[in-house]
Image (cartoon, rainbow, N blue to C red):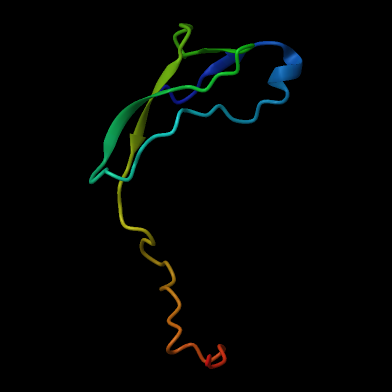
Length: 89
């Protein structure tokens, strides 16, 4: 949060901007959904603003934790039953 930010700066720089990243968010130790404050990585010649018009440097990120390969995902390949693979010495 916010879902969107407004970025101001030189037009030539804005035309080069495709995403606005945050600092790395450590997820290895998460065991469930969590809400984390993260710093925006804003180039020094740009400024970010929230929907209320206030300058912002952090955002709130919600990380959802769940199983990889939800419903409908293909199962992992099983080398012992895969007939397309040649035997290895």
